Image (cartoon, rainbow over the protein chains, first blue to last red):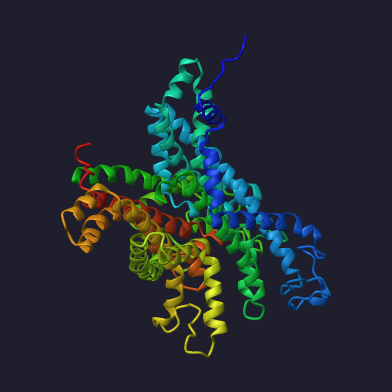
Length: 303
Length: 313
């Protein structure tokens, strides 16, 4: 069998056309995200910050809770003794403490956001997909929770049941899932009647597998944006608790606790306030810029 | 409209009682009590104390007593501030919190909304980027970072200069003492208001009715103010409702750092001291305010957006 000789000059163009691949929503989004200078810069800074906080404390000459008895008065940067940013008023290394505090703050931020993500996506997707009474019940519950002064309840919980690391991120996660649930429900409502969902149902897929394999992957874009914007809120809430003395316990530390300690001695040693405050602010800035960048990348309508 | 308000109140009132009930039993379920002093108290004195504060009755009885008195506006005696009832403490602290909150709210609206409109009208210009950069600062810098930093700058570094500002407390009651706390409080609201106003203004300016208004030759200014702005205010009002409730009930951080005797600070101290009745009183007050403000927001919708009709639902 001989191949058909395509003498037409358009034939080459046609074969080329076959080679052009369609770009998916995510590929498009990545391209737009990487064109956004603020978002890329934020991503790089965040990566550097994360590496520093998670590896830094082990590489420094001083541990975050070790007291240098030669420098208990709170010194400035001193290369010789290994205190690259000086010490606090009890002689602990400021850089090591700031990096270790960042590790705790970021860990709580990620864990609490995961709790919020899990509850919010489950409630939102189930309510949106099932509709009817289930939807009514879940969404009225969300409405009710919105009118509860939740920060008060977190504080009461932390006071009553002790300063417990696990309780803290679970409690914060339980506060932050509400908006996530509303957003996911809204998205699910608009997806529910799409043809591919009908097709899945016609193909015999059960409710749970439709939610897990067809609904959830399609709301991930919106969820990703919201997650990036939730992490800074969680970090702020955790630091706020630590600032009030209700967060992690000594000798552990977090940015909020360091800022509280720094505020107490800022008159004599302002570095102890400014170093953790600056680290935290930079991180929060980058997370917010990244979140905005992601939103613009996934939903370019407003650009 | 009236029937809608009544229906909403019928939901809001049970919600309020659910919140107070949850708070009540949560505090009673906790290990440790308000009289766990460092030095152990003789059992007879402890029994007297518990009787005096109505803690010796069965839990359900305590709950019923508390609820009956709360409805009459009596939150009971404070566990830690002897000689004071919670109602008295709240009556002392609430005006201070409310004054600061109101000043911060007015400042936030006066700066945030115009900045947002300006940014929207100059979308993607240098002015827009500058304004949104500042707004991002207001959002990213939490108030417990902003407050000590402002104190460091204005009370310590600028000491003995004309720019020196007192680091809080009511002092002689002068306005100067309120500048830093009010500014710290309002910053994050200025930022959010600017961003929300900008986004909804941009959205409104693209609507068909704005094009129609301009096409029929109305002056630009009146199109912006009367057509676009009125519609753009709906998300702003949504934000302002809960924001007002939060501002009026006082900020725990700002009042703690600036040593202002408002109810936010009472709540923090009450929680740390396990002063059950004080914590309950402040929580109930702020829950009530949030519920009321949410209702006010929903009623305001109907005035701003004629498409919203509650009666015909």
